[in-house]
Amino acid sequence: MPTPESEAFLAKKPTVPPTFDGVDYNDTPRLKAAQDAVLKEQWVKSMMARLIREQLAKCYYREGVNHLEKCGQLRERYFQALKEAKVRGYLFEQQNYIPGQQDPAGQDQVSVGLKQPGGQIAIIPAEVAKKRGDDRF
Image 1: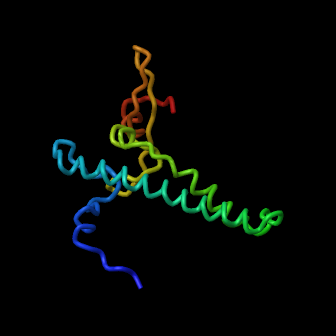
Image 2: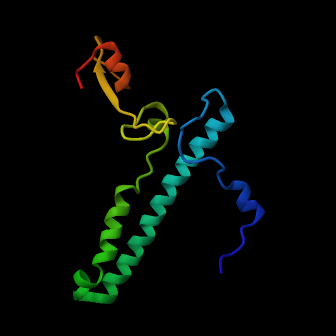
Image 3: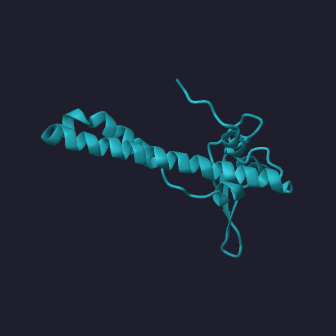
């Protein structure tokens, strides 16, 4: 039976999804809420990987020499969790397009890196590059 959530817990629970889609960057409270939600989601994934690692250590200890056979599924779950377990922060997601994610219209975003005269690389959507006539992607 699940425990009831207290009012204090519900007050701290994020009310926005862990993404910057549709966030107005001039609306500071909503921007900070989105940043907080992204960080909390990353910490949850990190803690889930820690719990799986602890279960895997118990399995290795319990099974002894047969751990390769008996703990294989747990080991695979741990390797999958490790791919997403890093706490990276929110700045990259906030400042850049991420290829393969969907925009609000439901279409995949594709980014193109164009080298600027000063040696810097500008990341722009592929549709904009096609309109400019840049076919370097």
